[in-house]
Image (cartoon, rainbow, N blue to C red):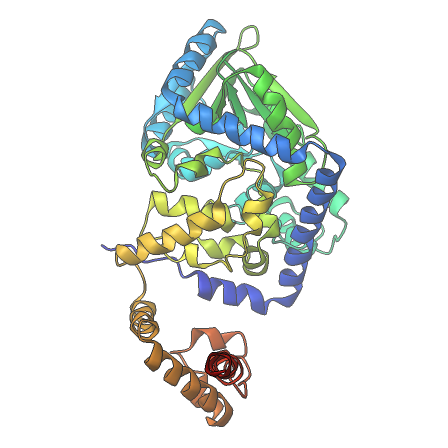
Length: 467
């Protein structure tokens, strides 16, 4: 059965019609972008930090096997069990076997995009393991049976009444409670007994340090520390690209991460995990899941530099106005649009086109990923692989032929300007014109630039030559 491409345009159209959610989503994320800019201006060395972060990541990726082996050796010396997962299925099997060995029936976990990527909850729960998200935003999304809509603030598309209704359904709280602090307290009261009774805890991780065999988890709620330390068993899942060579390198990224994500100088909790507590057990699962393949893609390997800050999402006008869920993938926004096709080219073939190509995403990226250039390159690859919709493919084919013949092109432009002025709306705005679905076509002009140039410049030039 052929996989259908995600219909981003249709999902975005539904989000756009919901004015209260659209307005809040757009303004909230733009506020994060502005706070990021404020932090940037407070650090004179900001651009140098971006360059250094990019160089460290490129060096690490160029020597990834050696640094991964160094991490494994040092982590084992620290008493950590290290596992390697080639894909999502192997990751889930490894985690499932660890939990089964310890008789785990309840698992608490902090935010981890990799476990979302691997569909871990869907794997564990039919096997009798109850998985509870402890991050507030992730828990909201879990209760609503939705994917995270943002890398850092997973429930940013929801309004307070949405959360109040959801908590009333699951926690029997007041459905009319419109106080965010009260709702957060309700989640805390519901979560603490679950945390205290859990058989095992799980976290993601922001950075692996090869030199020390340690890993770092950055959060603002402290839930990751509880998930890691309250139960006697801690499993951490990280993508193999989250590596940095030395502890000294880590300082560069810690300075950039929260400033880029939320506009705050540092996360509230930046915890270094070196090994298990006395009487406890710690496992690290290193996940490939297509990353090695992406590393070999000449045009797209630098996307592996991403530190998951979400800055590109906060600035993107398309993401802010279409909502993260419209991308139909764990990773949304500009970074998702260049990562997702590496997982499934056909399914996510529409996402690289969900961009105005304004370049703002690349400008704010703390590790200087050329996101907008990769979006363009993905469009070219998808066209070459015949993954464009039929109408778009035919229109682009005709446009290519038209633009390849200057005389025909100029005649068509002249005819189009006339048509815009005289044809009725139904002839201009129909299913063949997706541009006109949510915006007006440009007003007709009295004279094209080419005709003006011919009239005003070529005549002057010719007179000068005759003289």
